[in-house]
Structure formats: structure tokens, C-alpha cells
Amino acid sequence: MLNRLIRSKFDPPHLAALRTIALFSDLSRRELRTLDGLLHRRSYTRNEIVFDEGEEGQTVYFILSGQILVCRQGRPEEAAIAELGAGQCFGEMALLDNAPRMAQARAAEDCELAVLFRDDFLGLLHTHAVVASKLSLALAHMLGQRLRVAVNRFVA
Amino acid sequence: MRPPRQGPGPLTWIAIIGVTCLSLFLFKKILWLVVPFMLGLLLYYLLAPFARRLVMAGASPTLAAGVLSGGLLLLLGGWLLVLYPLAIANAGEWQAGELRYLTGGGLALESAALGLQQKFAILRHAHFGEDFRQHLLNLVNHFAENHLGTMLATLAAWLPSLLLTPAIAFFLLKDGTRLRKFIGNAVPNAYFEKTLYLMHALDRTARLYFTGLLKLFAIDAALLAGGLWAYGMPSPLALGLIAATLGVIPYLGPLLGCGLAVMVAATDLPDQAGLIYGVLGVFALVRVLDDVLFLPYVMGKSLHLHPLLTLLMFFIGEAIAGVAGLMLVIPILGVVMVIGETAEGVLLDDRLRARHVYARRLRRQEARRDPYRRP
Image (cartoon, rainbow over all chains, first blue to last red; front, side):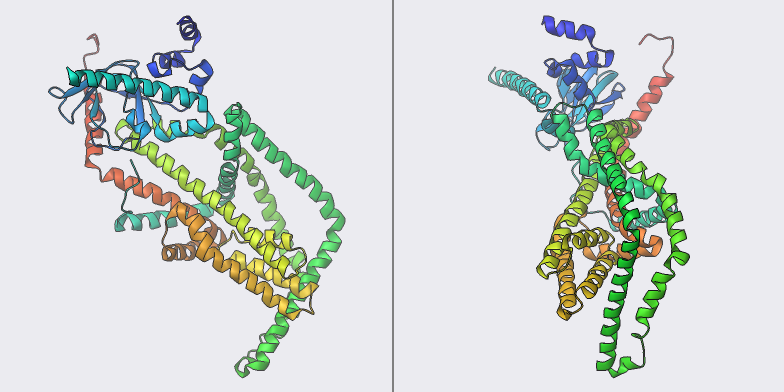
């Protein structure tokens, strides 16, 4: 915890923004810089669509600021699935397979996203195996948590 | 985002071929830049796996690029330093050798032509075998005054741009990822994922093509050297390497390589008449293996081009830009094909266009918002 706090104090602003992403919290500054070299920054206006349901996904999105609404295609009000804020990620299934997007994602407010392309992640597995495995572990942890929440909701 | 399952439509194909022809026409005007760039790409794909290994071992991409490009430059410089005094010391001997091989080759061709004339009455009136050797000797004797000046001037003009090659490879190794980010940033959000996929597909196509070219070179060199060695030819490895290098020029290159080997066979071992046929057989066999087995397997994977289209494009390339066109037409077609395929996918995707228009409208609304209102 203290280590993380110290790290975030001395990180340059662009890395400090990435440090807020839960998945990157275990990465050292050097590892984070490596990852930063692969990430694309995108800005989305409120209500802008990030991706559509059924679209083939090749990227995972990390929210640096703002909020993202995940919903059924074209039904943001009545069929909202989740509202995600800064530090969270979405579209992560694209890293694991080439399956179509399961829902639509749209900006609930102006937001800034960091985007990782699937093939860049696969390349990371070869060149920076430690970064890739830390990321994979964090991703597995997050998916496990989401599964647990879904199961609990289903049982309840 | 996967590559479209069906290939491009007929209109897209027409556009792809048109753009390829136009690119060749334009590239012909700036060959001094295109050739070093292609060589730079070749070096980049050759060095990329080693750069990855260095990065894996803990080096930064800049250090890896510097070490590899610098090492290559040192190797080339060292090679030139060794070659230059060697060339000066042996210039006379090499010139005499060149003359000897050309005369030997000319003699062999002349005797073959005369033999044909004796056997076929119809050829007797053509007199095409006569004075063949004399023509060759004239060419060699007057080569310096007729061609050497032009060749040296061309070399002097090309040398500075060829020196760009390691620099291009260095910057591609160092800043390849940054370049992709830069291009990605210039694209609207709606097309962003498609653009990333396009860049990845272009990279994959070029990598498969250039590494395929290198693999093909190694296979050809090994087979030719092995075949020539089996027939007892002198310097089989050097001949195999030279012939494989010339083989990079489609159609014309293998003929030149074969001609060179025949000249050596006719000069060094003139008593073994069967050797020339053996050499021709080796080259023919390697050509067939290349066309039937290696070319579709090694190169076909990268471009998925129909053989008839490939042949047609070679003719078009040669007609537009000569030997350079023969060499450039397939990689250019490959790149234009990937761009055309993706552009077709994007332009025909109504949903992406609608999303882009919607996003633009949202941004315009945002820009028109009362500037004094708090966000």
C-alpha cells in the first residue's frame, strides 16, 4: 500500500493516470512505461458510442476519467448492464478471444480511455512476459470477481 | 475486425490494380527513395526477431535498435574495408577472369548454335550462331568506354540513398510502435479499431512477404549450391549465392544466374559437355520447385494471390517500371490489397459511418455549448 502510494507520488502525470487503473496497480514504473508505449489514448464525448454489441472486438479499454455505460444495443436507459468509472476496464474479453462484443458501450459523460490492442498484448507475452503475466493475473482476478457477483445475483 | 471472409469485390479489385499501377508509375520517379526504403523494410523484418530477443533480455527498444543497426553498419563497413584493397590488388586478375568466362560462355553458345544449324536446315540461313563470340569480345573490350562511365555515375547517385537503409531499419525498429500510435491518433473514434487492425494486417503481410523472400533466398541458395556441387562444379557455394541473389528479380534473375553458371561450366570444364546440361537441369529443377512448392508455400501464405493475377501483375510491373517494376509490383500489390480490402469494409459499413456522423454531431453540439456555463 505504502509502496503504491510512494510510486504514485513520483510517477510522471501520464503514468500516474495509468496507475489509477486497478489492473495496472502491481506494475513497477518501468513495466508501466513499457505498457504505456503500447496504449492508445482516446477521448469520447458524452453519449458517443465506443463499440456496438455484436461487433468483433480486438481491443480492451481502460477508463482514465469519466463514466462508461454498458448496455444492450441501443437501449441505454431500460437495459443498462453496468456503469463503469475511472480505474475500471471493459471489452476485456477481446484479449481472450475474437468473440463479438456482448454489449454496447457508450460514454455516459465525457471520458478519456486508454486502449490496448489484442495483438500488442500478445506481443507483450513474448517481449515482456512479466508484464503480460501480471496483467493476465489481474484480469483473471477481475473476471473471477465479476463471475462471483453474477453467481450471487443469480442465486439471490 | 477479422479479415473479411470473402475477398474484395470486382470494383475493389479494379481499384486495387489501378492504385498499384499508379503507385508503380510514381515510384519509378523516386526509385532512389523507394529502393532504400524497401531494403530498410527487409532489414527491419530480418532484425526484428533479434530486437525482440534483446528487449526480452532487458534492453530498451532504442538500445536494441542501436545495437543491431550499428552492428550491421559495422559489418558492412568492415566488409567494404576488406573488399576494397582486395579489389584493387586483384583488379587485373578479375578482369582477365571475366573476359575468360565470357569467352568460354560465348564459345559454348556458338558451338550450340552451330550444332543446331547443322541439324536443322531451316536455321542454316539464319546465321545466328556466327560471330557470336566476336560480339561478346567487342562488348567486353569496349565495355569501359561505352558503359563504365554511366554505371559509375549511377552508382555515385545511388550510394547516398542506399546509405539510408540502415538508418531506416534503425528508426523502424526504434519507433515502429510510436508510428502506429501516431497514425492511430489521427483516426476518428468510430474507425479506430479498424485502423488498428489494418496496421496490424499490413505489418503481418509485409513481414510474411519479406521473411518469405529471405527464406526463399536461403532455400534457393542451398539447393543450387548443393546441385552444382553434386555435378562437380567449381565454387558451387559462391555460384549458388549469386544465382539466388539474382533470383530476387522475377523471371530475369533466374535466367541471369543460370547463364552465369553455364559460363563457368563451359570455361572451367570445357571437356565435360554433359555438365552444361546438368547445370541447366539443376536450375530448371530449382525453378520448378520454387514455382510449385516453395513460392506458394512460403510467399502464398502472405499474399493469397491467384497465380494468374501474379503473372499478369509481373507483366504490368515490367511494362511500367522495368526491372524495378518486376521486383516492386508484388509487395505493392499486397499492401494496396490489404488497404483496399479494409477500406471496402469501412466504406460499406453503414453502422461505422453512422457512428462517426453521430460522434461529429455530438462534438459540434459540445463546441456550441454556452462557454460561460459550468461543465
